[in-house]
Length: 178
Image (cartoon, rainbow, N blue to C red; front, side):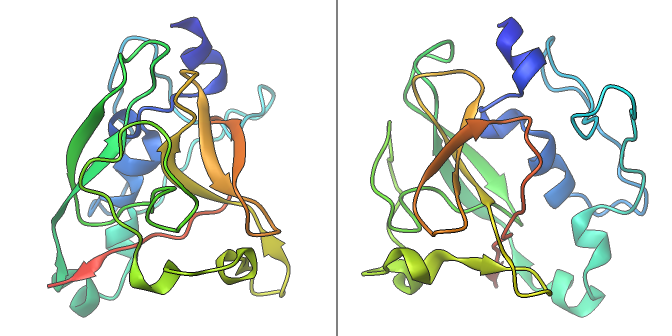
């Protein structure tokens, strides 16, 4: 699917961000997961700067990283090229899904549930703030299931957004202490 190469991939199992979040390497090294995969380029053809710092887990305090438990996560697959259904992955650090933050169901949401923190939440409860106090859009792991390159996120108003997977937005990494 050429749209994936141009606009990014909404299959969470293949996302560059997933690789970074679960990397313990002192120098994060991107690895292609499918034929149309390309390294992140900050969406700027003139500046092909690729991140060369440590993986996310390597950036955490070692005591915290040592108690993060692996969990199995289910994520919907798009119906455009991946055939629908859901894929199971094992993660230590993950993005929350549309279902887990209380923003409804889209596609197959097998084994997903609304986390207690978001149960009964209103949009204002999902707003994330930068250190400056400004709200930012943050990615979910859920795809827009009718396309191969659009992901779901939470915009500055706390609702549900739909954007090409290649866009650079914030993240709210989640993990389970075991």
